[in-house]
Image (cartoon, rainbow, N blue to C red; front, side):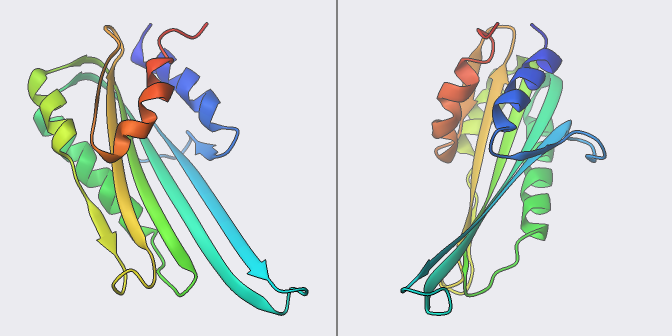
Length: 166
């Protein structure tokens, strides 16, 4: 299986809940997925609103021939900055999360170690207007080897099954 085929399979699993975009996505990314959720709680009638919250997630997919530390740093910076450009903190903003998914034919040991060290987060007005967290995961398609940061651990199961899907 190639990294492009793995991307196709992965995007199929994201289409159920995310808006997946392949056309017009600026390099270095091959695709992007966007998730938006608005939740309201009210008492008896909608005009008696108790609370509301907005959650957003932006997932950036990169396909690489060989992932090394330098390329990972470039992808990391591009994903975080593009995600932060879209944040609009306000009183109902809960979170805007950014996720980087790298599918590579090969991955150097240095890149694997660097993925595990990626850590970014940001709060807005001391958390009163929400926060942003960052998840990153890389899959070496040829061997099925995975590397993730602390927040990206939840994506392991999804990516582990990609090479085995029919």
